[in-house]
Length: 534
Ligand code: G6Q
Image 1: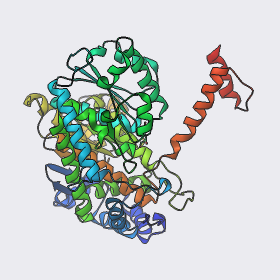
Image 2: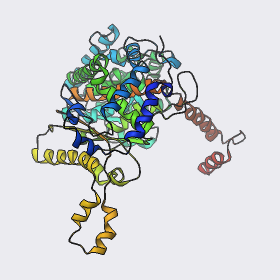
Image 3: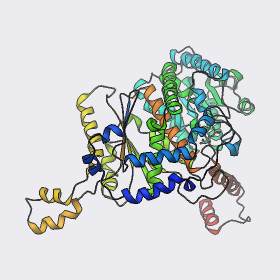
Image 4: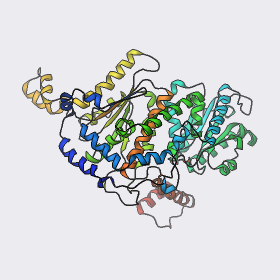
């Protein structure tokens, strides 16, 4: 069954939220904290080893009540049930959306078998039983894929660096030849194993890169050696075989797993190679726990649901343009680019589930960089700029290498930023600080030193960065974006918006090859291509 189609702006809750927004928009959160000693308790969720504090938001208990009413009015529960039981909720592609089945307790047979295959394969490579064509052990893995077939595995391999084994793992995605050539220039074909990840096995970038790497390999090896050095993850068995990869080196995928939600499938083979199968399994377990939380917990205490509703509150009522995600862990430096695809490819839609043009804002723009680095970069704008930018702060109670001095400093900054964004600094405080200066100097400087505060933040404080907690964190954002898509009445699981550029690029490539400018084309593009060829 398909998802219901309810225009969120037609709900009673939406109208109530609009009125409520006008009542609360100018209130200071800090006053609410002063008035209600239990505010933090009320707006904190504890789950497994996660603490989610959303008390530093421009909300009251009424806001929360109304946002929950909105979720109920669009029948979010029904949508969650439909997703988890495999209804074809990706309606425009007529597909189920079952990345949760990849990590569930009762996995479909083909999933279990594929996991077993990944386990065996990754173990053989890690312990050195899998030999290259000259009998040497594998030292390096090259993952070739793009978009969903790259960002997820790359982010996880990077985030779990602490848990890595001796294998070097490299990612090639861009069709920019400098990317592939720069990556392979120091690799030895005798000890390199290539994992080609492409659901369709027709993606221009991936196939071009795969051929370039195969040609590099064949400079020193022969065709029959390909079997020991190339494996593929794909749904398109025919094309994989055409490329020269044998049956036993193919890891299957299924069309009920969307690219950007596929790191839990065989797309994560490079993860299992990098950190071992047990850690990969723990990543899946962490995600499964979040799935259970999301699908069974009352909305009131449901982490993804609450974070999604808060995001809607700012996006649709405060007209916030963007949201920032700031992980206080250098390991998580690739988390935001990964989430950008998940969130923005899923919810960047302007047509509702009836195919009608939408009149309200959808898809949040997310961006961010790890703290504390970002404090020395763009935080100025969050603190004193004209835009309202709700932020998620993600931090860990314990560091992995255990240096307390560093971690205390890191976390002091983590807490201080959300405190500063909440409290700001008033003109009175500034005056007090400038007391030592002469009166005229004081007056001159004062406006620049005031912080308005009242900037919303969520704090997600996790015990430790482990494969399991990372799995839960990623699943949290997956579910959050789904909830938002349900409420906005859009289809989150298709991505037609990426097609047009691909089509035009193939036409321009033909134009470049044939140097033919006779076809109808806008003057700017034509002139640019001519200049490129000159
Ligand atoms: C993600 C998208 C997209 C896809 C890439 C790679 O949801 O579908 O990013 O993952 O275009 O596609 P292939 O895996 O088919 O090469």
